[in-house]
Structures are given as structure tokens and as C-alpha cells.
Length: 178
Image 1 (cartoon, rainbow, N blue to C red):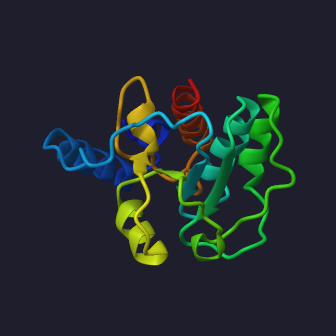
Image 2 (image 1 turned 90 degrees about the horizontal axis):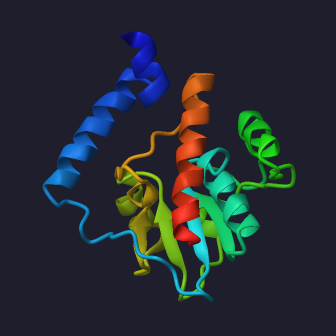
């Protein structure tokens, strides 16, 4: 049972958060953040916590699909590389994260027309508090075949969950770039 939890949800805490956010989504808590498809010329900015696992992969994959994309993190310092597992995951799929450098959301240059795609519901309030400007927001997991408001941070998780999470990010990006 523990193995299933760690492979599918990253941790027990990830499972609890997933269930809590799923329940809130069923009650309509995230209706204000629909999975809108960006306009052809609209840049997509992917935001996660550390800008080393989820958002850099989303950025580089979206670019490979012809979309203008960037990424940044809510709780990081500038100038760090992508996580080695994220780089390896991307490399196996023909993507390159070797030149990625983290950017904190406070140092990021947003454009008025950006669509902001966040990885988890807690990022909504954090983003709004740190950026202070009203941008269209969406939750990455809402673009998946089985929509979910929460994509758990894979940073301290098992290799199986890391691959599962990054695959989910790629699934969401494919839908965004349709």
C-alpha cells in the first residue's frame, strides 16, 4: 500500500493534499481558473515552487511544440540549474534543460497578455500576493485527461513518482499547445 501511495502521490502528504484539493474542486472552488487554451500569440508562463522540476519541463516542452513559453518559481532564488532528474527525464524525450536557470517570480518580467499556468492551488494566492497584478490563471492539472487541480512537487519523491509527475506535466502541456 505504501508503495502505491509513493508512486502515485509522491508521499502520504501528497495523497492528503490531492484528496483535499480534489474534494474542493468537486465543490467548485477552482471554477474561476478554467483550463483556457491560449491565443496563438499569447505567451504561457509556467509557475511552480522551485522552478527546477515541473515548470522548466513545461516550458521547454511547450517551446518544442511551437508555443512561446517561459517559467519561474515562487520560492526559489535566481540562477540555479534544473534538477538532475528533470534534465535526465527531458533528455530521454529529446528535450534539453541543460541551460535552464531558475528565476524567482518577483524578478520575472511578465507581459500583460501572459497566461499563467500554476501547478497547485496554493500557488494561486502566493502568485497573486507576490506579483500583485491580475493575470489569467489556470491550474496545469486541469488540462490533463483526468483533470486534477493539484500536481504534487516531485522534488523529494521517488523516481517512480518523479517520472509520473513529469509525464503528467507533459500531458497538460500537449493540451495547452493543441
